[in-house]
Image (cartoon, rainbow, N blue to C red; front, side, top):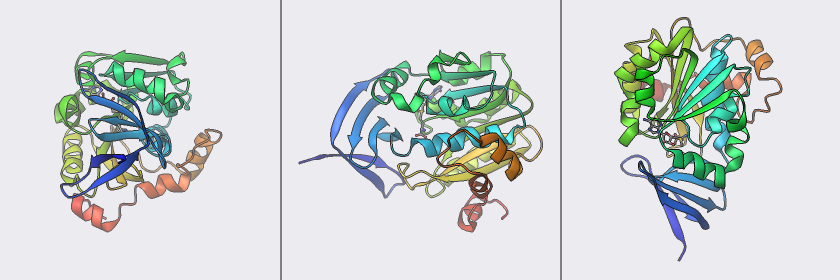
Length: 282
Ligand code: SAM
């Protein structure tokens, strides 16, 4: 009998993956960490039974959470990543000509296990002289640190345990204080099929401290429900409309596998059933 991993989505469905091999299983102070191998998705990082990233489709989520906000800013120099232990987002962010990228991850074991079993996800990002890894609670870091940033990216687990506060108004208010003029924050905001309440909460909480809120979508096969949302808040101006020429110029040579100028534009085009559920005018 083969073993299957079940990653629950909404109350009535789950994605399930046959476990060809279990490469690692351990418990950190924060979560259960597993690395398994699946015939279709390759090696998969799983935290508390929720698939975080896989060899087959990691680029989709990481490209969309890194490049959309970084391109929405005209000239980002300093980026902050909260969470993101697998290093995939850091690797994408460092493709831009940043001065510095700081990553604040609460769980060192996620970083160590991913570097050991899925090293290609971070590539050499952690060795980049512009990168700095801080092992700490991102909520506390945001409250106490004083360094300024142009773009803040929140690559968190779902709002459970230590990640709950990453979706709160207080956290976004602290993030707002860290942003330089023209700065942006972008977060993964869950599934538009069964986490509409979460997306609405993020939009409401962010909207209390930032004037311009936009939600965009990507297709991530291993996140339950497949259609995934990201929400971005900007200190001013419409961040969704850099010209196609700008996106093409700034992504030339980055070797992206998902994001193109047309995908960038289309990601903000919310299908009517999603816009309606989120109460966003179409
Ligand atoms: N892409 C993933 C997804 O949406 O499923 C998220 C991947 S990343 C591995 C999520 C990371 O957020 C985890 O490593 C977890 O330890 C980290 N995390 C959760 N709460 C945190 C907090 N308060 N501060 C910093 N990192 C946190």
